[in-house]
Image (cartoon, rainbow, N blue to C red; front, side):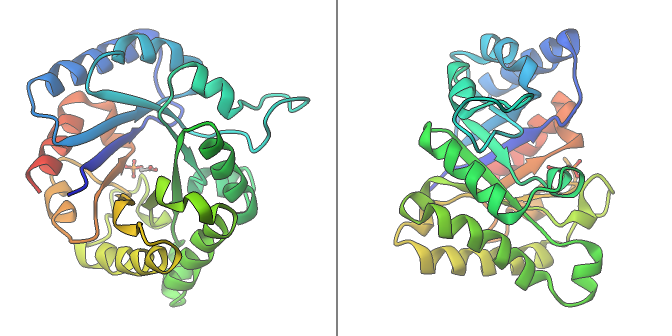
Length: 251
Ligand code: PGA
């Protein structure tokens, strides 16, 4: 059976001192647990070296929150997958709704970013999800399928190497979580889409994200097609993050 994955998304939070305390507490908590669940923190790029040093040899992997679609060159401000790899980065979030919304990232750009990560052996955590208006208009399935289809189209040959995160935009940072049934319904749609794309779809981790916390994680993770979580706010508190990991181990 594939392991569950709990990944923290720190977003634009943290600082040298706070990072050290947080990562040390998570690593210490993890070493007390058996490793039947994968765990990672996706941190702001300037802190990758710090987090690498703190996590090396522990059960906690680390990732980035974005990656350039380009290999190298005149792209001021961008960070390439190659550079991420230099810091042992295991994951890169791509297509987070905050990037789609505030930085105008298109489905095509997100799929190119996934390809750039895969080319360097970095696992892209591909985020998909509908806005509240789209949900209310009955477009949830169509939206997530369109977003995932772009990534499948560009990365068909290695699609079983990706992680997918379903994050309903209306649930992110709002305290409004999708019900386990709502989340499972969308996960089942995504699972079917991946199954049609690869014979190895059962390897692909499908995460739920959007106000997942220590209190609601167990019921979400009990759903058959929810293989883990992408955790924002609750990943900034070691005790909460560790509790979510413990729920994933028990699920
Ligand atoms: P949240 O964020 O857990 O704070 O809702 C999740 C995410 O944006 O990845």
